[in-house]
Image (cartoon, rainbow, N blue to C red; front, top):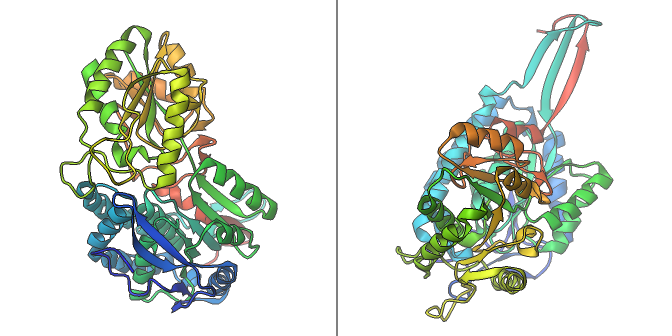
Length: 487
């Protein structure tokens, strides 16, 4: 069973060793549409035995299969075929995202066509990346520094951006020569099925790409396997810390893109109405369910009340509705438990800050997991709503004494994923960005650049994805010392 407009050939099977196989157990994963509160898909569920089968297939494919032994340029050619195939499935990817998490239909098509197009930059590393360098040595004639695939990769993706995040992991791993086990979120498994179908369609060697949707228990079994060389995980910081502890015990390589509580510093030179328009509309993007979301706005104390009033005006004008309605600006949260989480934080926020607008379920929506865009003002940066990731349309406005205090507040966080400086002065934006301990800083908004590295400081993760730097997590560096130059 799949949503309308999404055609999965074998939703009841797993993709292991180049074949669609029956899962070991009888459990299934049910996917709920959060706008309708109805089941829209049922897919196969992998248990521990299935995980072991997938690991064995990926291990065999890496140790004895052809994929790691192809040249990087040969791998690039095959990946370009996969991208051509995925471009034909963009309408299905878009429909799947809207059906599974209630993402706006108006954004889904461009989002997924852009994500597929971005894969070409990863694939092109086959011919652009320095896979080998030769240098004269001091103790030897020739030093060869070669970059080799890290091995078998377990790729674990979240539910909010399931295609782009999983596809990036898979394509970086494949261009490096790794083999991959895809473990999508149980809330959004459909995109990974389409990626597996792409691998099958272009004839990737058996075991090079494997698919095992599962719950947390089987996923935990997967990451404990000593036959895995690398785990790449995007998700919550709590889950990331657990996975990191497991990987540390086995010395398994790992990269993590985790949570955030990103700050926007509003300088005195930036107009209030412009700041309010950016902040009030950004917090509704994907219903606030974005790891890089600007969920803390730090403003000079003298401008706090004026900005609060302007943001509230923007939020009150946001149209909340069904994700298929082209006029909708804010759709539902992805699931009931996410709405419960957001509402818990709203209640917490009322204890320590001023609730200016929002905080309720919209009265005109009698079905679906909706929450109004919500603004808290006079927020204490040490409070829970300022320090913990809410992952919903909730914005905290924090007053600062001056620019130095604003930078201090921005850094007073366990997270460091994203940030912004609202200013008309690029030099000031640069200077402040260099002092904020976060992986990305954009001028005047939640800026994203898929050709650049993305990742976080502190509890926001380890390693980087995106850009040419994204390949680094999927390679090992080997040094070969020779008495002469090889051919």
